[in-house]
Image (cartoon, rainbow, N blue to C red):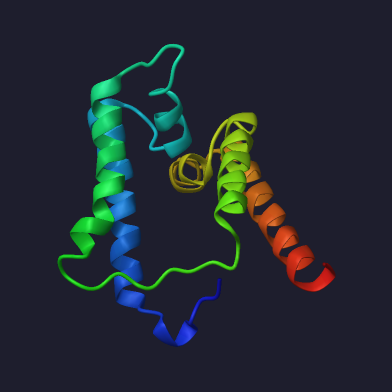
Length: 142
């Protein structure tokens, strides 16, 4: 997968970031909950699903967003050199990692850093360092 920097659209990126921030603020104001996607999804799964209505609406909004975006402009082409089984395995490992790390990039990186949480700063720095190391090893070592 590669990113075409010539296709970077700063206005769209700024708008997307502002919408993510607005959604996080509204969720805290109206529900008193942090917009950590892994926690929201995990609470929908057995053995004891909790607060299902707003969590289902939140996840439905995440899934509907690309379809709504598609009404205004074509979706960018997405491709990956990885196979579907490898992508599924990677997704499962990310899910396990978010549970072990007590949160994900949305909970720590967006919501935690905005609340000046030291724990979230450490978690976000750890996420980023691991991502940098993984890319370096996959691109330059292996």
